[in-house]
Amino acid sequence: MKLTCSRDLLLNSINVVSKAVSSRTTLPILECILLSADERGLVLTANDLEIGIEASPIEADIEREGKVALEARIFSEIIKRVNGVDVTIDTDNDFITVISSGNSEFKVMGRDGADFPAMPKIERKDKQTILQKDLRDMIRETIFSVAQDDSKPVLTGELIEINNGVMDMVSVDGYRISYKKANLLSSSGEEEAIVPAKTLNEISKILSADDDEEADIYFTDKHALFDISGNIVVSRLIDGDYIKYEQSFTEEYKTRIDCDRNEMISCLERASLLSRETRKTPVVLDIKSDNISITSNTDIGTSHEELDCAFTGDNLRIAFNPRYLIEALKAISDDVVSLRFTTHLSPCIIKGVDESNYKYLILPLRM
Image (cartoon, rainbow, N blue to C red):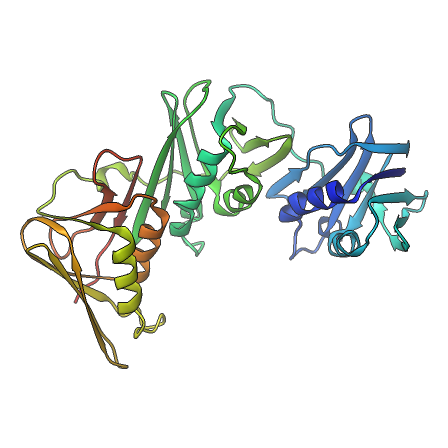
């Protein structure tokens, strides 16, 4: 294989696929990036057997077609540090690869590209199309409440439901629920799948924030394929039944406060300054007559905050892990949010003041 291509385009493709390079594996080939030179141009692929990413083809001057797998860390560092405009890659029959750019030349040992695991073949039917910006926002606004342990594997992923041209994304970690919905640009029917959080986290780094960029999604029984501006991400799905989250979001409440989101975040962050994360010290919200008193009492000391709000219903004193409230509030973009409560032992539900495309549920702590 021998070719010449743009260094900047090559580096961009490396950054895209490196998210699927395995860092802990007994198979050295999975620590590599596959370079394929053919009629499409130069295509980079990485695959850790859970998620595989194939970058969009790079235009290249190809003298000899072929494949080689290069150790990802070394290849990435070389391309980052060379200072030429173009890069030439020349591989011989023993997969010894010469990389030259500007005044630099490196000779590295490669592996037979034929040994690199192929990504699963996904039949592209029943396409779902969404704005990349919307998908990016959905992931950002829900990913933080995915379960961090494997005791319930389905909770290490997010539920994606598609009905009537609307996509719902849900995450649950046992203490809170995050929900976000968005309209699809086009839909080919209903779908339900649990996508690993790792996949969604890596996808969010590829997605564009531009208003007009689109992403196509295809599902099979075992896999999901995301086509993001020609970058192909294939991920396994998580088997199992997701929890029935809908019934947890009740419309009934006895206490409601509408408050400035940024001011509440600031109050909670100050109130939690004296708490140790390992102790999970709660903050206490004392809600009454257009005012919230936010207090924290720890072995280090105490703090007290006052926050004005619009109040309806019964007075209430309730405690929470401050991090759970802060993470939910930071995921929201509205200036004013509505927090709704039933009792001091019942969950808090956070919504928009009016009809909104998000909602969050957070369990309280016993005082």
